[in-house]
Length: 320
Image 1 (cartoon, rainbow, N blue to C red):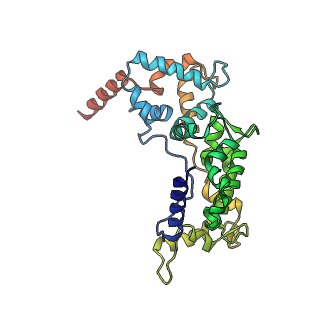
Image 2: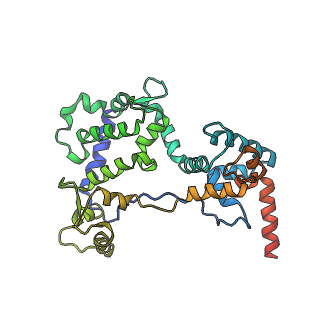
Image 3: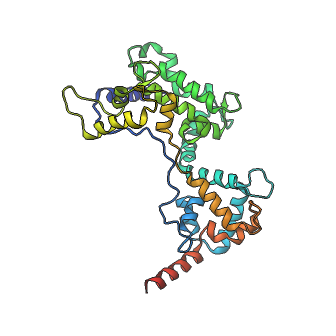
């Protein structure tokens, strides 16, 4: 990292310390919706298309001929069949749908990959990441002695190392694509949830007692100006803390209560869609899908010029 980047980084950090934000900071992680289309198979399969392909790829398929759509779908089925046994399970469909819905995450990783894979071996070691990110600090630590602790490289480096090791499932200190994606976007991976909870605690727990009290909870969202009134939403959040965040009513949140707050157990839309696609396509009712079964019901999974034309005809007929 060059001097200009370092200076820009600390300028941004210092500004965030000095400024007085009055907007609510969002800590809660929700799974994104699969599609904004109505889920009504009697009218259209557009919801299923966007859930299975992602919104942008669904648009691409809508421009293909039926033959092209089925051909591409067959290739997708081969990718979904992770164990290569010729059968697609609900779990494999679920994994595929969740990956599709997180495509922006993988695209983000692809954009920065070359910046960290310094030896071009298609892995990013901890040493490579540390050098690319903290190299200037490590070579010139005296320049950062007066930096605010919260934003100093001295605090960030061990935190990043801990997160890197949590993402490095095989323990070789070299991250492959999936591992590096988990490192950069831990909120998207189940095995990284503990790290997300821990880092949230460390961010908010200013007195370092291992808990988050009401004032710390509010301070994370709202910097109160001396003598100024609190907005109504802040008062509402104080009620939220006592009524819903502090589950054991001891006046503070522990790690489990932090987890309950920031990682709510939402309805699993991807799992529901995976079960729906399997149920509607499983002609022999063996709780698995073959490629043939999927291709037989291809227009539920993907669109084409023909399906769009048919839906337009149906829609226009209904309007008459």
